[in-house]
Length: 180
Image (cartoon, rainbow, N blue to C red; front, side, top):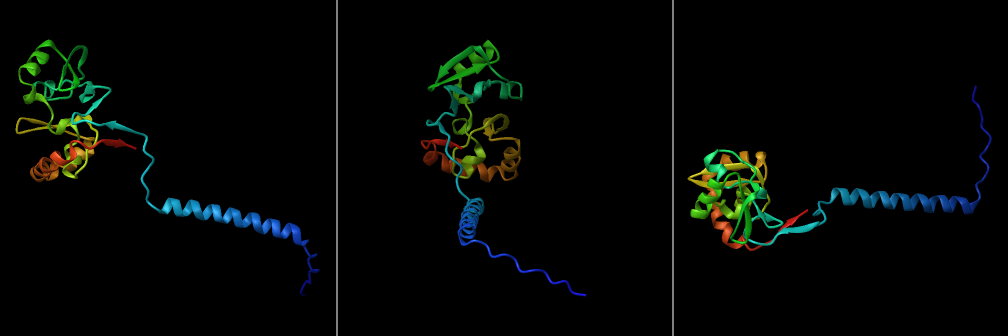
């Protein structure tokens, strides 16, 4: 047995056109969102964090970590705000008075390479901010990286990465770092 349904009443033309128009707008909006999601684009720029050759935030080098402690303690140690000095346009903090004296006696011995920007970023041709706890002492020089994972990648081809960063630094050092 086959059931026969009665014909649907005809819809009025005005609501049908309105529904079709609204559905079209909705579909167009979804298409735009899908295309934007599928198209790689730079995230919006929030601010320029570094404009000089020393990586500093609000005038503070190494995000307040003691540059001498990397060498003497073998670890990243936050400096004491009461034990700071100005050098090369930045404020440097130290864990102890002895560290401050050592730095002032031989600042080039303790200053990080590439102004304290990420060594791996410099190898790739760009200035990148750092995590002060992601560091390496290589050949008596302090190298910093963006984070611990970046440090691991950088160390995989260390000598080539340092050579590439050394080549890139003269042209990259005056560029600003744009934080996104």
